[in-house]
Amino acid sequence: MSTIIEIQGLTKKYGDLTALNDLNLNIQEGEVFGFIGPNGAGKTTTMRILTTLLKPTSGKAWVAGESVIGNPRAVRRNIGYMPDFFGVYDDMKVWEYLDFFAACYDIPQTTRLGMVDDLLALVDLSHKKDAFVDSLSRGMKQRLCLARTLAHDPQVLILDEPASGLDPRARIEIRELLRELKTMGKTIFFSSHILSEVADICTSIAILEAGGLVAYGDMAEMKRQLRAHRLIQVRALGDLMPLQEFLLRHEAVDGIITSEEADIPSDSLRFDFTGDDEALGQLLASLIANNFQVVGFQEETGDLEDVFLQVTKGLVN
Image (cartoon, one colour):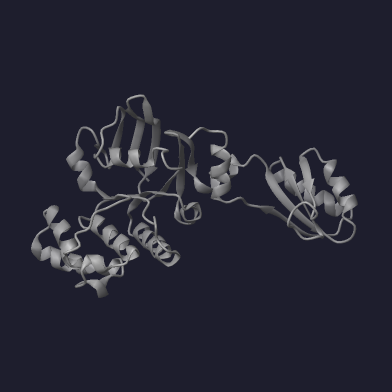
């Protein structure tokens, strides 16, 4: 895969306030890239720079090989941008709304007729073609706005909080739509506060805090790297005290939690493990060799919220 978004030392200052500080990112073609962080972290600032709506104080960025500073017109041709707050024309019908934006990209009228139908089918709004925009639910308006970003068939979609304010069903619809766009070969760069949904569809993520990058990389690999320790739960028959004492003698076991201290089954123990996969396998073999009747032995995997809380702990907003 080739790099389709490249960011080098991107910085944006407003007087004494640094909204974005020396950001460096490379996003590969075809990725679904999640950009996460609290309000004020610099996510929207980054997106506005990438979409040529805001000039950086320093640094450079390229989208599809075009400089956002040196050739903004070419960048706009390659991207579809969905802001966190977008305007709609309430006195327009749905098909007129899409037709208007397609015309803004100089798409011929003969082409626009079929294109509008295709876009409405993609976002499941064909049945609303002749409805007025202001009659749509918020979720439908979000899908319509996403269809608008696709009018000129861009390579890259930059979506700022696409699921913001939606009910659970509408969020699921947006998520499934993003999956479909990925299968169509689109590169998707989007921000979100809904961390579990980012984890569900993204190939890689970046975590931003106070204008600075605090974590960045492949989803699965980043979870492994950022975890301070591994959490293992073992279930065994009989008295657990000998098992607990045995585990505590192991150099890679760092603390044990019982059912009296956490919400785990009464026949189980949970412990922190600082070793690698080989050491974990050896520990399990050792338990069996010492006649412990182990009936369950598994690693508990943290979710994206665990990663986010860990890497932003102690940082100033």
